[in-house]
Length: 423
Ligand code: NIG
Ligand code: FE
Image 1 (spheres, rainbow, N blue to C red):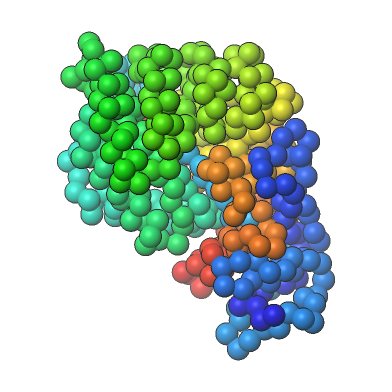
Image 2: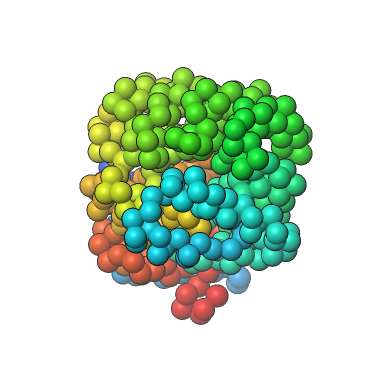
């Protein structure tokens, strides 16, 4: 068989070989390490993974790309499975308020926060939104991310803006090397004009918006910001159940700041993931473990919110909850696209081992997007989404934090980023 791309002499190849499902407990430490590894790719798929030389039955041709990964580390492309990629503007004006002690929910309740990004996003054209999101996607790719989830949620009651955000995500998925998976988050904040009658907005989400998003095939997932002063448990349940009826898989911003019972609800409904979970209860964690709901944790956000509280990842892993990690890239609570930094935060703030962090940001991230059969590990038959890191091992990436270790990114079998050549 002729290979189109070969990566050889890999010092440390972390394959993440194992079952095509979210890994739990000690499985999260099993990263399928091969020393002196070799990978062969044909078209967009992996056709060989092994040790030492490439076997003779795999040939190269004149256009085969050969990468020498001597002294380098190779891992699956990173999956950032929770972002608010498509939005307009930025909120650095909130920094001074934060430093003076203003809390995230106070800024939101005063009509700022998400509402100010809603305003900016409503006023932005399709191409302005596209260009800003594309720039972020380029940064994400430079940090080794090959699949990204993108939420709407900055139009809220302005449905055209919600649709515009999802259309940008769908278009970027077509145009950009990074795969973009779209999520409908119309329930991201209670619109100002529904402040006194939020259930009226919940009705519109259920009766009008969800059926239309589903009909236009603009999203795979449906999400709700379930939080004090935002959507309560009863409203969240109704919205997610309506989404399910229309084929949208439920996700939830759960127990981010206040303990709301979001983890419990995620287990009851059967959400694919419950995200944040800083204030999740013991019972909620147990229920998530029973139902196999993935805890999608966002350490960059709890770092940036500066509340001093972080999700209890160790407790979750030990209880058998599958854990993934993501940036939560957004203009308010986590303004960074840097997945490698967030991986270091996961280790340092949650006490997750580098192996657990690697599992959480590859195969478990893939599972929280229901893509575990296609991506998330380096195995024959999987898509060739592969990252070559300029580091002697993976622990080094976690340890030497805040910088970019990416050397090459291979997406769908193609070399899409070469930092030595500068593309
Ligand atoms: O995941 N919590 C709600 N949504 C985002 C923040 C969005 C924003 O502040 O613009 C989050 O933290
Ligand atoms: Fe979020």
